[in-house]
Length: 240
Image 1 (tube, rainbow, N blue to C red):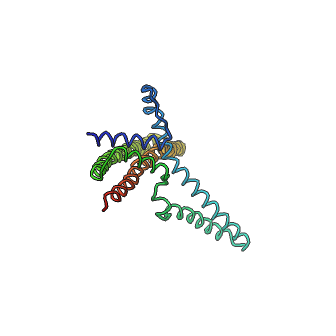
Image 2: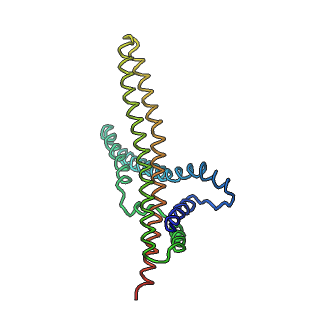
Image 3: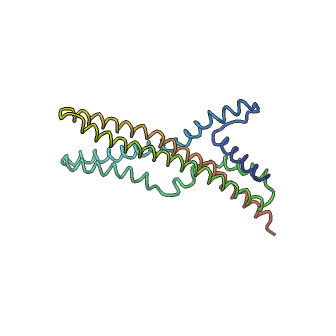
């Protein structure tokens, strides 16, 4: 059971390190912070990556479109050609972010100082490579549990959206049948407004779930990298 408790504590250590939280010896205060403050900070931290990518994408799109607009103006191209090139420039800005090289994002932007801290915490809890492998197996189970939570949240959101679409379609049909000819345009306009509003509202939980998943990955992938570092140390010390 010692390795099980060690795995639990390491996940908590990784969370605290990621959030920059200091240990609070007062248990009620620590509980309140963990239950109410940390979840918001955790999701916001993960969502920050999405915001950064949004600004990066927007910056590239504006840059490419500005260059195309300037060149088109210098060449005195027709408006139809300019519009086509501007669309291509916007797509290019989106393309270079979506299809970035793996070396640009696959390391999860983890800090070396954080990995060093986690490696030290792991070394304090295991004394052999066999114990480390058992610890890694326990962490893998916990990571799977965290992934299942994300899958459940996604499924719940997809189910709610599907129910809304079904109800929205049924209400449109009923309103169209019950409404008079001069009211059809107003009814359809109001329904479209409701649909757009629902889409915008859905973006909030989608971003929260994506941020939550990203933050989970930062915790467990950071622990994986740190375990690999510790494993190398054991191999060096055990080699003849």
